[in-house]
Length: 129
Image (cartoon, rainbow, N blue to C red; front, side, top):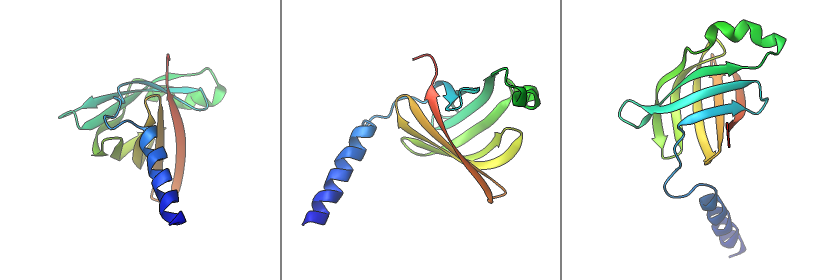
């Protein structure tokens, strides 16, 4: 019985993180490192996600990424649940399989794997709020 109460409590907490009707992922999102911004938009039939790198800070290491500015990072990444999209992406010049999960109205998690071996996870926050 204690286990069932714990599971129910976890479900209630998880349900309160995102409302039944998910917020739109459309907008500008900034990586947790505050050096990169990505514009995301629903596209295709409204069930897909498209995005482009739209801003880089002046940090020295960003020089190599400047040719990627305003170029598509992802095109028509497929929605697999109301708060999650999966598909091929271009992460900092590398082809990757990735997942974007909307954690809340103002937070996304971007997970990507290059060659299914090197994987990285980024937290992204809605810019301008």
